[in-house]
Image 1 (tube, rainbow, N blue to C red):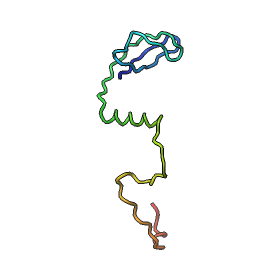
Image 2: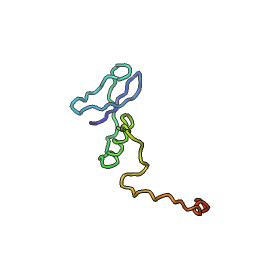
Image 3: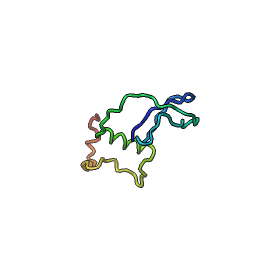
Image 4: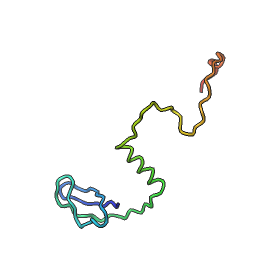
Length: 97
């Protein structure tokens, strides 16, 4: 659904997502309820693709995050298992990075 730019004389500019069939020369301002004429803007030339899909996923997660039911393991999916912790006391004297 395309996004159109409108400018309310009292409140200023705002964007509205409207179907092309519902588009008119003006719309109602969401803040004051006044009549806001449609502005002329550059066309959106974004073809979508991976970047658009990733951005849309982040936008969804911002207002509706996934519910966590357990403490995360700390590993990424598909990552190799962690190396076992050493018990050799000499390893404690090695320099740390």
